[in-house]
Length: 282
Image 1 (cartoon, helix red, strand yellow):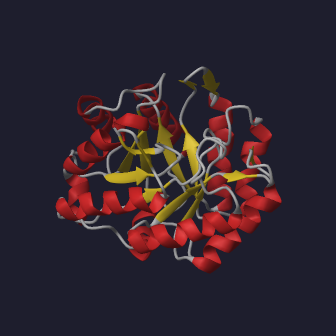
Image 2 (image 1 turned 90 degrees about the vertical axis):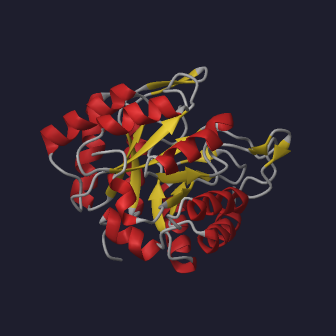
């Protein structure tokens, strides 16, 4: 796919990742960790232009969890309260066992993340060995859940090609990727790397890009200029500007939407995003 082929649709898919598994509520009071906080965040972000919500959940002590009943309740509440596409993280926290990460799919989300390889993640290692990737991918196909292929490095794109070559297209037939840039240990969050990554993607794939921490704005601008889509949220950055903490996820979605309008590719409504991503009608 060429850098500008995705621009033909003239709309920008905005994904919000509001919580993540890394930040502690004690350090980031604005982080949505309860179900009520998450639903309120989702409503605000949908109104501001988001079409997809990438979900991590927390337990009663605000610690990351993959508890299946909580995940099911979360999917149900988000569907009842918003029209957003619900994408559950299968990454969890770096310490979560593989079986718990596979079980996430039993909560029946519209989409899930599927990371295409292991990566150093700061001082930790985010483990995604090939057999786990294959098992997760085949489960998405069987359960009719659309995977978003999360790519932290250029080698992950080679693994994605291998996965598609061996096991066929994803449910719905459309390949959508997210370039996660700026993780210490992954690919840097700069334009040169983004261009190299996009040029290596499978033909016809659509993609969004995520800049972690201080790379959030450079990656957002580079993605828009290259015809891509955007992922923003407090999972990825808790600073709005130097010395200015994010006060709510909607701040980041509004900024992404403003940039999309400026690029003359306004935010894509969730209904159009469902068609683009080929999610299961629900």
